[in-house]
Amino acid sequence: MRELVFALDYEPGCNRVADALAEHPNARVRSLSLHATADRLWRVDHATGTPEALDAIEDAFLTSDYYADCLATEDCGATQTTRVLDRADDTLVLYSDWERTPACASVPHIARDHLGEGVLFETRHEGHHYTWRLIHSGEGNVAAFFDDLAAAVGESAQMEILRTADTTASMRESDGTQGALSPEQEAALRAAVEHGYYESPREVDVGELAEHLDVPRSTLTYRLRRAEEQLAKQYVAGSRVGEESSVSR
Image 1 (tube, rainbow, N blue to C red):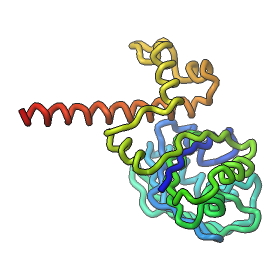
Image 2 (image 1 turned 90 degrees about the vertical axis):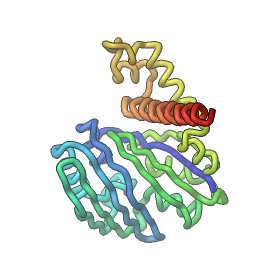
Image 3 (image 1 turned 180 degrees about the vertical axis):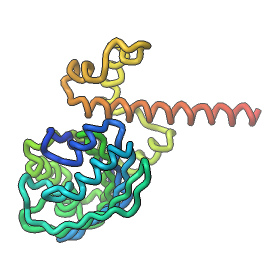
C-alpha cells in the first residue's frame, strides 16, 4: 500500500469553507469518514472552534452554491445535501452527500480514475490550507492523478505534494519510532529559529516569516504545526524508552 499526502492552499474567495476557517484561525475541520463511488460522494466531518466559528463553518457547508469538495469554479448542477448530526459549544458534526454531474470534479473522483476504487481518504482543513491523505494500492498512475488534479484546481488554489511513501514507513513515523521532518518542514523550522519566532517575546510573527520564505501564511503555519507535533511525539516516545530502560536495570 502507498500513501499520498498533499495540500491545497485556496485563494481567498474560492472556497467558502476555507474562507470561514481563515476568519477563525483556531477552528479546524477533519473528516471522520469519506467515501466515493463513480457518481456519488458522501462524508462526515468533525469541526472544532468557538461558537462563532462553528456558525460560520455550518453556514458555509449549508449555503454554498456548490459542494465544498467540488472543484468546479461555477455551479456544476450537482445535487447535494448537508445535515447537522451533532452540535455543541465547541464541536460540530456534519453529514454531506452529493450526486455528481459530468461537469463535476473532486479529489476523490479524480483519485478513483487514476488510483483505483479502493482508495481511502482522510482530510484536515485549517484556514485556507486543505490537507489530503490518500492510501491506495500503489498500482495506479500517481503522476496522471496529480496532473488532472492540478488542471481541475486551476488558479483557485496552490497544490503542494507533502509526502509519498510506503504505508509501513508512515506507520512507523506516526508511532514516533522513525521519521525525519520533510524538507519543507525542516526549512520552516530552521527559519523560525533563525529569525526569532521561538524567542520570548517573538522577534518575528508567522506572517513576516511567511513573507521571508515566500510561502502562504497558512502553508507555513501548517508546516510548523506538523513539525512541532512530530518532534513532540518523538520526544515523548524517547522519554518512554529511557524510563523503560531505567526500570529494566
